[in-house]
Length: 91
Image 1 (cartoon, rainbow, N blue to C red):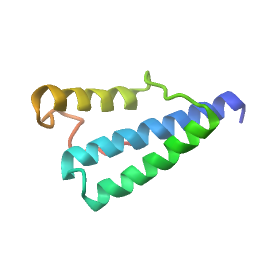
Image 2: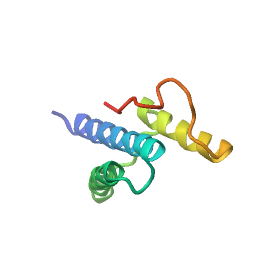
Image 3: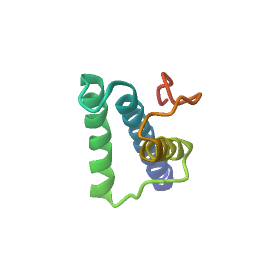
């Protein structure tokens, strides 16, 4: 595995963990045990990226879905009832 492939794999893991966190926050709330576990996983990957100087890839589909979810919640004050946002775990 090349350095570039490793970086890409780490970026994908981070994007998937962040999307999963946002989905669980939307579904169960910020203080649910499932949400807390997802937050810990995301935090671990994020801290690794920070220590290695790796930036998030905001062009990944998972990053865009998480951003859409956050934007919708800010704009409308609620979680979207859109296909693919509820009960669809990040891979």
